Image 1 (cartoon, rainbow, N blue to C red):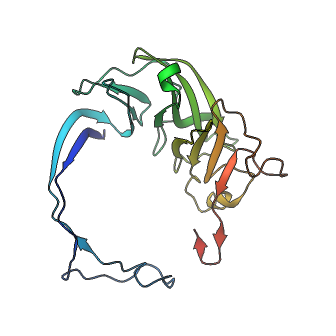
Image 2 (cartoon, helix red, strand yellow):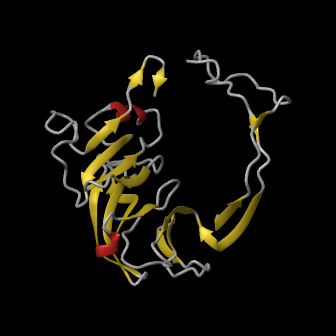
Length: 254
């Protein structure tokens, strides 16, 4: 079944002050872990009287994943997880799929993911995208994929010129799940990419292993090269692109 969604703007009226809802009753806690403080698992339920007005800008989208506001009156870029990047004007005109993008693995949670303007977009029109990159098959014939990020020049809001991968997750995985994949910049020439751990109980331990880029925050230069001051550069068995990772504790992950 095809999933359709609409890009909508929410016009939020001023909210009344929140008040605790005396009628709300908590169910049983879903964990046996003791709370670190009283309100950790039982925070007061606050009720506000906020009115929402929804203005639909465009509809007919297939699994929209990310939206980027373009400068001035250029409108928006948005990704559809099925593998397309689209331009939407401020008045809701939806473009045909933008040319020049890579093939994606469109399965389960895989596909075209984030889109961001590069930090020097005004000068070079460079955009960055993340996506589920097909990586062939394994020995059992299962399709493999990996979180990948790349960049190219947005020409005339219709084509991405010179697209190139700047980072590809290693190793790849057969499970098309938990890709992560948000992109952010720090203003100092670095791009950060979040990655998922591909979901399964067998895969999750790799989020704590420095030899795999699953379940990590990645930090590379804008061209994909590795910054010399990344924290694990030069450490044997560690991937130099890793910026941060989760730490397992005796009471679970944090």
